[in-house]
Image (cartoon, rainbow, N blue to C red; front, side, top):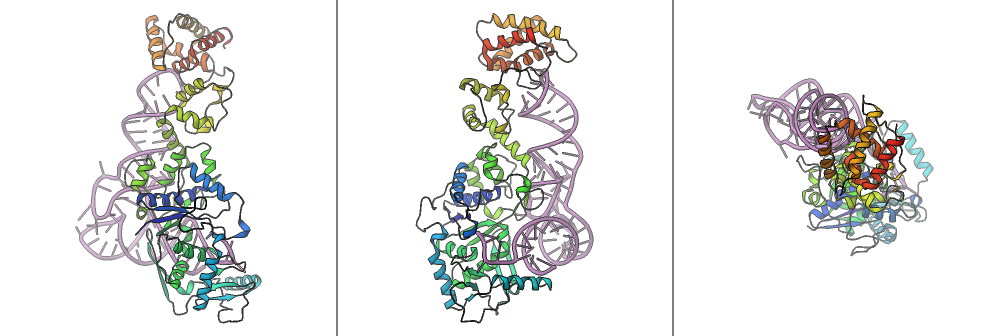
Length: 467
RNA sequence: GGCCCCAUCGUCUAGCGGCUAGGACGGUGCCCUCUCACGGCACAAACCCGGGUUCGAUUCCCGGUGGGGUCACCA
């Protein structure tokens, strides 16, 4: 069988962390099998459309490196890939079911339906449609909906899912659900079945919240006489309390991308609810594709651990080449008018310390400010300044400035050993003279960053004005 | 409430009848060290409960409990 999976978002907002994972799994499954991954826009709810949303969704997928083979922007053999452009197909399909008496028209008013549900739930009965219009033949087309008829002969429905296994549902709990709305647009149920059949979808990979309506979909496929796709219902992503939501902070992908590398985010999200049975934590895109197996996706929900994402992002940062990292940071933080070489060196210094791209220390780009005392622990300012004076003289006469921090360390430490200078009393003032901070990269790193001129300038400033 | 899903450290997880129950994040301690990170080492931390099945259950079955989802002319 040829593998075809899809991501079918409704254009009503931003790409959410949960949708990213759903998409990623569908994408990985297709890529793993050399199949097709396509995009379909589900814009059947006229009232909830958000303009520009579909475009943003696609942009965000691109920004995390998820590519599709067919879609609204690039077309493909089974288009159109936008549901509002496929209305004729849904109407035709619904009409066919009416002709076969597997569906019927209903013009019950919203008021009646609401009343009905209220009465039913007041009596502690499941709120379902009472079949008022089931036998009617006089329902006008105008303003009415088409409902699916749950056969009265049906007792059990067996559905199957490749991560949950078989599920058997009592048909009595099923409702005569709406297929076609009165505005002529299909409901999700109809559109899903018609499209995934027409578009040859082999695997429907979607969130667990769809599981309760799986029997409807199965019944529809059977009513049409179509082969059902393989279903994979993914466990939900949970926040602090229940389904991941705004309560847990902004969970939009764009929000994460402000501080997180796309590859780290993908790596992180891939391992939420699935893992290839090892102790490896970091996977390249290729490794994910090679290892992915939908049937090994967990059936239990996963709480999102944002701290681990930060850690993972740090790991990715450490593995990057400094120039690439520098460009990633440049787009996210204000680097003032730092010149390229200086910025690149600052990035090298911060690379082992950084977890969030947006947390790059600002002091590199700001005027010098002494915030920590020059004196080391129990030592005194006088001693600190004596050391700095000696150090300045030594650095001053250096013929060649160290090429890198390790060089600087070697040279200065040799000199210190020579003079019998204690490290804390010397290096602490040295570092504070350069950074002004309680915590910062080391003095050798900073001397390399600033170069001879600026290093000497800062030393002199500390000797004269330092406290 | 009906229906459905789920259940290993706080969190993500390995485990697929016999293990000192492994790893990662986070936490703690130590080492490295001028500070902060990085890195290294160590420690604390889990099989929800009750019945079965079995020589033997974290693992299989049933029940309970707990958590979650879903019950629209939304997806």
